[in-house]
Image (cartoon, rainbow, N blue to C red; front, side):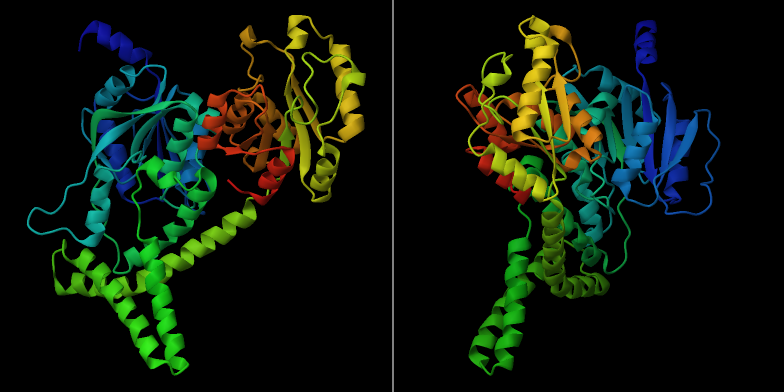
Length: 503
């Protein structure tokens, strides 16, 4: 290794984070990291996601290995516990069932050193070794899909600063499904790039039980969460494919209809419904059986689960839709001040010039009556420019409070564009400070404002954003908000959309 390259490697700071439930694969992976060459990670953080039990017994290592507990809340919570414990510039996530080569550290560092500042993450190239002497089973084909899947965190490195910016993994995803796509989509929406690296990692095929594909239908509830978080285009945005839920719904309704019609004595209609169910089920089973090994056991499993999967998929999707629709009610609404709550007057410093937008008072009273907290998040660069004194700003805000309050918190940035502060929108500082002051989860906040900076600040903090376009709102800001957030006609519609949880 050339001296210059060694110096660059030394400069790169990375920590490996491994979420685990204590499987034996973990020891194999740790042994592989120990046997691999340089450059060594700053540390390895093992996120133990078992609900309890004895401490993990880990092999000895020349690298500092730390164990953190995440309490059995799923891989999203485990990864969050791991990266938040680390301090390195880069966080390299590895699943505990992957296998790395002896050159993995060097390849990882080469991948990361090649990235520009606009790139937030590097994804490995996964290889799933399938049996050479037979066709793969349904489970094995499912694992093989990881080779071409987008944004899989089985081996993915993220900048720690970007993880902090978007709030990390969403811990409402309780299983290893969609949580990686959700994070990557948030990162992409925040304006960052995700690159595919050159390092190669092996992911052995899963060996699951006979009803594994049926249990996997629980992931349909996570699809509902993706829709609620990212809108109806989330599948296109994540390259997730169309899915079969619509056909499963038709098959399920046909089966239920056949039973109901038969009970009512309408045998011809029942036979037609049963025929539709049988045709859809046969097509589904054939599609799953044809690429497989055609052994009696595999064919039997596919026939049985092809009957059971459609109603299970529909049940879990409905369960997810109901759960996340109910949980979409926000805990707090955070309003921009000028051109959102009051008519905009540039650098307003006269309390007598405060004029609420039409209907603002009644809307805010209704929100308070519903038990939702309210705050204000406002950029006031006139102070930094010397156009408004702090006392006059306080007097104007007091007048707004008198006319429209009370507000649970006022978060005001008095800096200018070039000051480099972390609070001025579109930075997330004001939104996060408001959530903390109100004692709510920032992800349960909705920011309502009239500029793209309001929406960008919301998304960067992990909140929802709603844009109310005005004469000064730029067309590109409106278009960007339509893709990433919600656009409302006026304050009344914005409040309705926020409280209803609509995207």
